[in-house]
Length: 443
Image (cartoon, rainbow, N blue to C red; front, side, top):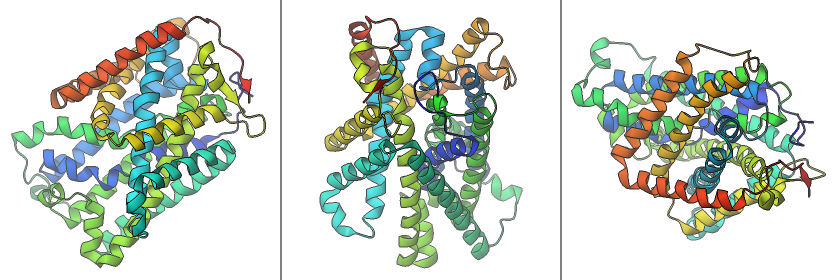
């Protein structure tokens, strides 16, 4: 039993399944087309995906140390709270709950239903209701027990990777193993394409988003000193390899210009190969992938309001743990209800632009937190201290740079995000009276 009141049941493979399940959602079936709009050379396309993996790995090294140093439920919220104090921690929890997490749940559920509609066309006449229903289904699964949720997650993640590798293998079988010719790789490489790597990283890193998800459940892992940090690294390495294979396969089927003009790149590939049957087959793969991403996002997201609620008395109702299932039921319900509200609202696309600004802003703060926490707890988290101080320095620089890219390319959405973040301050000051964290409250 952890100090958070949650049972330590999770292990190495559970963490990999959670992280890979969140990261490999539906982005890899859409984002490569957007990347090709910015970079026209195959070599630069592949380099952008590698760079995205390296930036994510920098973050993983920082989070691996923080997770072993502070093995408590809440992940980034706990790290920011301990490094900078409760106001910054609360603002992260506010942004994560109100925009990033619930919005991600709503978006992935929408995509799942849109592909399910290829099999059941009548779904489209009641799309919002079906989307809310699938959110309710996965929320219920995770309320009934973490073991059920993680078993489903492990299964979906294994199926997802198997199907993706099958897609890559099938394309290579039909078109042959790609031969590397330097002239073909650098074709289209010019100054605009090279400079296009910067904005292309925004969608790429959105696709890599989720590499830190299992740290939100640190209080439920048996081994936070070795197994959890190593699983974070292994997850990013696996995802980077999968993404590179997928992009090589896409480039086998399409030129960068054709990729840039595709709205559903993997569907177009299979339509070209196998016609309508191929489109339905790949729709099934996307449904499995989206199901895994949705389950992981709900599974980890329910721990954020739970961790925040333990610090603030007027939120303490959401810190309730179900006496039978041992899960943060009320926190999971809160996320599910708010995600459903966003579905009914139906205007989440603008918030996707805000996602990058908010996420990388708090990643930069987390990188700074590594320095502060090392000074305060020099003996803690000693298992994985990789490349200090350059690892956190490079991660901070990358995060600030990506925030700047978001502001330049989406100033209105970034301003909206800043105003919404600022709204969290008066909420914090109103709810901050209690200074000691309450014990877990049974349902």
